[in-house]
Amino acid sequence: MENSHVEVLHAGKPDRYQLLLHESCVLSLKFAASGKWFVSTGKDNLLNAWRTPYGASLFQ
Image (cartoon, rainbow, N blue to C red; front, side, top):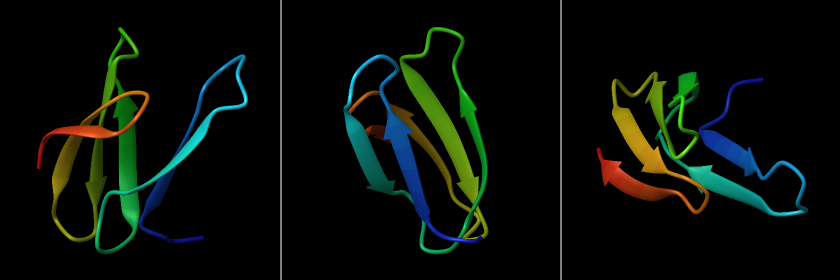
């Protein structure tokens, strides 16, 4: 299923965040070893870096 959303779940808590990261489908998602941020790429040719858990953009 292709879509432009990323859903972030917090392990051990009921917290759930849905982020609209791209204008087209997300192709890949990679978390940093620290778990404090992640990078996503999409069919829209964008690379986004986001801080967890609330999706604060580091750059786009």
